[in-house]
Length: 95
Image (tube, rainbow, N blue to C red; front, side, top):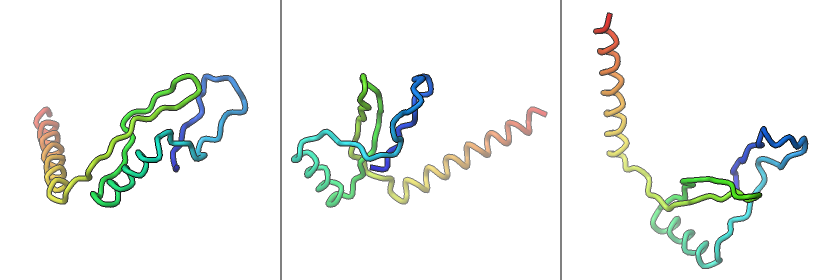
């Protein structure tokens, strides 16, 4: 649900598919239940890692992942700000 697969611009077909329609997830019922339990109990998220096309099907590789903790986010923000500051100082020193 809520996925968008854009039109293929080189297809040459004037009437193409609906880009935002719901698509089937081809998994066994047990697999879907297990993934739902993991999402609910362990607070994991389902994230698409790869998408590729085979004939007329769009195939998606999905993974169960855990989000960043608050301290991880702070550390990544601190690293980004340090990187930006270094680039600014290098840019100023060139002139």
